[in-house]
Length: 320
Image (tube, rainbow, N blue to C red; front, side):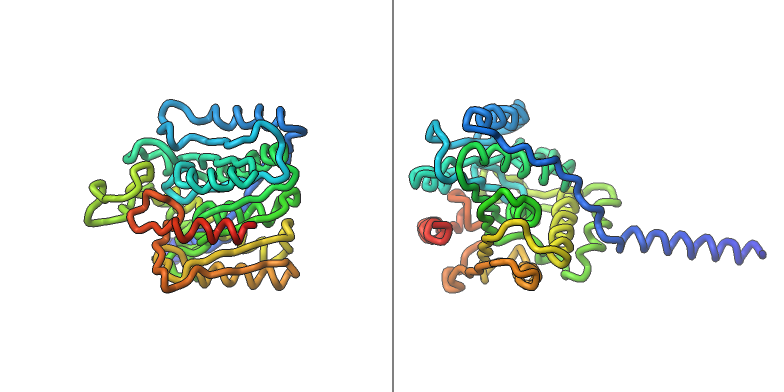
């Protein structure tokens, strides 16, 4: 074979392999085996182990929190925060659920909660996100007779994984889940998930003009890493793929969307809901009033455009 032919063949094989790596579906997440707390005391011990991961790098307000009535209650609730935010995002809402009788756990997703310009989030993996919610469910089993998981944005994707895989949860609620992100067209999600994972990490400002001077939530990061985004996209693709092939493990699902959202793609969430319903799952949907013109981060009271005086009572009513 001529030298030129060999070079052409090698180039074609290399290009084909590169294309395969960019378009192949993400590998499944290996989740820890369920290990539910046997009782309230065991739940407290497991909570302390989860909190021990919050070292001195983690801002105090961003550490894993537990609001407890000092006993097992009829219901326990897990609140999972959004991408680049931290447990502080949910503190005021958690207090309202606590007053309603819930024991409430707000876990910190790895990579979050450090100083504003920290780079920790670039090391986030889908496995870490899944491990965090799995351990949180184990804890919540000892905190309440019935467990509810509520996730917002990135937390909604993580909660979606729990809905698909943990049959010991009574109810899962997804609020503005980030299964699709606005800058990326849905057919290209796999490509970008793989591309961001393979390329060297880079950071993107939430506000490219204001950058670090952006006026916003003080405990959230003003930028996000491409590797962290790749982990979120990978988990999103995994949950969507699971939903197309098997019914969710949780029988009671509530999906809440924001028609005015400029960050996540509601069309991808709608496709996921359709897949779940095709599998026979009981899914209730609700959309916030478009006239409210809510920002994407409709949860954090410190978000400048927040309307939590409207949002929180409605969430309390929907969750029941």
